[in-house]
Image (cartoon, rainbow, N blue to C red; front, side, top):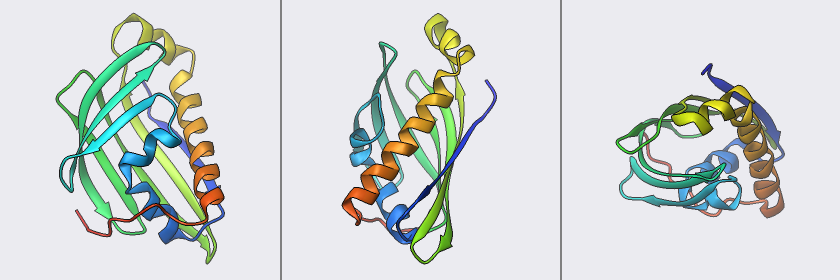
Length: 149
């Protein structure tokens, strides 16, 4: 599958957008198909997803995290193979461009058909739109982790 890349402009400062993205346990509030995320350590999260009727559990390790700039990850163990990075670029003092790039390896017939139909691309685009609505509605992040990996 070719990498997925989508961007969106959010009407909040870069630190607000970045801080919210570090609150992984809030992802089910704006990521369709994400049922639950548990943060076990500063760099290890456990995900439970159900997309297109396919339920998956996997761990993801944060491989790079630079405040107000980027968060990168790769899955470890589990049934899902993916890696990605989300970057945050200030447009001005009150707007940020958020760009999400992912490499996903589809497994099985359902996921391979979904890949050919562009479902992952649409999923990522929809998740970014819901993130925009989530953070702009709140006007502030639900928390922050400012550490660097």
